[in-house]
Image (cartoon, rainbow, N blue to C red; front, side, top):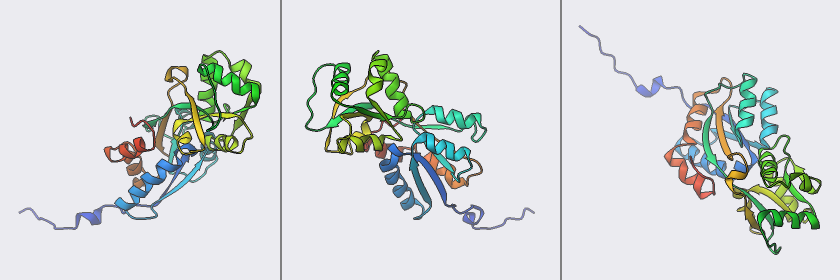
Length: 244
């Protein structure tokens, strides 16, 4: 005779455990909405979000910061953590893409092609970009300027910043003439105008990757899976990102 045991299936499932997400500052608004939706699905307070420049966060993770999920603004910093054996090689998931744009204050008038507009700004002042040494947006900007064959001429007029949000604030305060930033960040500041969009072929693909770090709880894995679900695709696109 086969014994049959009745049990509450939910009792065998580990309850969701709070976890911390380290994410690129350019993802602040979209992740706040995704996390709010995630909290509604489970329970409030499950996710703690910490945002900064991607390179800064990667270095913090390398130094032992308590991150359970890392959402990077490029693949390069993911590969860096793989090389340090801090994340699994096959664990990273592509969650969104973006575009690069040139912005100024809304009352500024520029004419001509993209490279001509950039030169105009450089002749009258300075242009803020993410620091190419550690900020993905800066690496994309440098690659684009190199593709346009104006990097050497433009470099003296460039102001490297810790992240895209800082670059935008410099434009708002009038400390620089313009900035090269992500389209999604530019859309958040009505006082600024997009003067040009960089064609995707001018720089490597702007891609955002999510990965679980270390011995994270299962709820962190579930959250990463949710970032590329049909449910969150609408949130990504509503914020101007390109869902994969």
